[in-house]
Image (tube, one colour):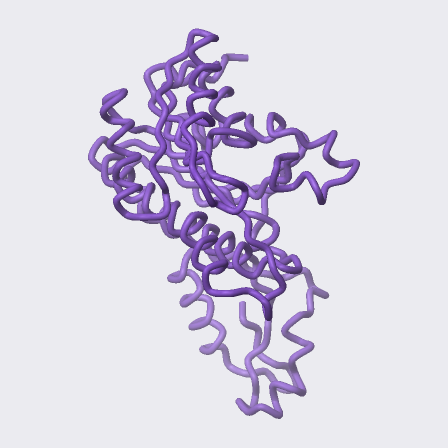
Length: 311
């Protein structure tokens, strides 16, 4: 089996001073990539800063004969995002891959969550991915090639108590992935995302016995594939943990068209919108696909005694 190499490729990894980001950096560096190790060096809640986290990973990479440079700019501002991308250009001359991994936690029950908790988490996770990806995306369009890997979460896709801010940001990253995948497709750019479960400082208190099976290193091979030129998928989202990988999809069931579009009709027929008895569902790949789906359903003539299908 031919080894997947990254020789000559330049990879930006945000939040790479530890945990998943560090693991991704070492995996790709082993395979020949030049790595910009971005990390603000703050605490788990985003407060504070230090240059040691990024530099430590750079030293690990150079000790194995790899090439890496540190960067300490914040992903949470447009200026910071531009500075990160420029640092990669200054160090290595180009940008081929962006892995948006930086993140913080400020958990609290929603009714107790203040605006600072909301803003800081969304700024780092969601806006951070936007701010770093946009200048890199422009370069990728010009060169006709690029890979972006976003880091979503089961918290945003499936929900968890006390993480309204985090969940909203992570769900937003799933949407960002789909849009950038569509916009980049004709320019050689592929954009995918992972929803990882791994034993890091963010999860050490919740994984229990699962922690020993879900090291950060078990996630990085999937990231390496999605970041590689051989990647064959675009706009996909994967659950990744401990060597298990499963695609997560947004599907639409067969549904109904109401014979009488009223609240009472909704109440009477709502259960039919969730029926999967016949196994029919639709997987829209874009808003345009969804519009076609709806137009078709609304154009179907009603059959006596049967609600028209939405497929």
